[in-house]
Length: 234
Length: 240
Image 1: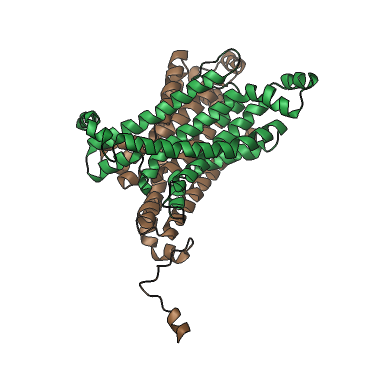
Image 2: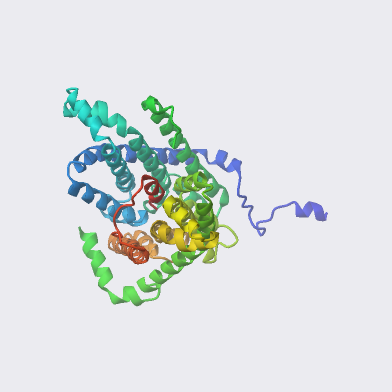
């Protein structure tokens, strides 16, 4: 009798709260997938827009020392602003939307990308430029055929850092209700009576997304820079 | 924008500063959590980094660790600690924050020791300094600027992450942003954001000044750039 009674789960017993529960993932698939999609979408859009703005900005910044210093100083300033405050500054203009999160993330990825583009372009040896000019390269062709390929490893490093950082930062978007996997961690986990399976799933999901994105970019880097293949990757 | 003028109205009301759960109380809690986290991180990170840097071992591991830590969302780790058995104490956010302060301190301290001029180390050895004296009198002073860069990077990140602890019920300056969103009052949201950003900037400037003060020899500008490419790589901070 006693053993039969103890196997019955009463409402008064504390609810099970395991760290790992794969059945939770299966049961909540329709909630999870749109949020994973949002996470990926926010990351890709933010890094792409960041890159599109960063490259011309780096080209502009390298023309004069003062401009380069200003861009670098401003980028350090932006990086010091905590993400929660960043989204809070933007929210009055764009509300509780994905745009709010995207603008903040663009700013952060922009910072990394401008720095690395600039560093890459500045590291091109002057002799190489001279040689290219001597061979009759105009400024456009010099940039595309000589400087850009030489700066590419530095740019790709920036792209990888920006992507990995952005994947992690999307979660903070939960403050405006657009946090991708952060929604799962906070709303489905912490907010739902500290339920652990969503928290662990959201955390592992973020790390996995970051690693996959990083490896994909590493492959892109290898394909784009076949001449560096002899050297040991950093 | 209306929200920004509303923010100044909010910040001009003394009651919002001194009241229960006012700005002074929240800032105090914020600094307490961040300060404890930095203490824990310094105790855990500096001794092994000094030893490894002196011996010149484990560099790839330490730099790798600081790269991996970038991929882990601080909010996730904060939440995980919040649902453990220490979740209702201050130690949950403190330990979570300390975890993220360790990698930059480790990496920069290590690189700082490795960047010490080899000739100087040779000279110190020739003068008869033993291992302990070598570390304390020759390498440490030379490595100090980079060690301070690591501490400064970590502190700015910790100050930022303490903001996020508000999402898990810990009262910090982030609580103001959160309650602003809760009341759909963008004035309060922006006021909170200004305070949070100001604290992060203050941390940066304060530790920049400390780093300038403790740098031996001809002083470099505290807010300039780090010299070597390797040192720069170690110093790349993460946005939080």
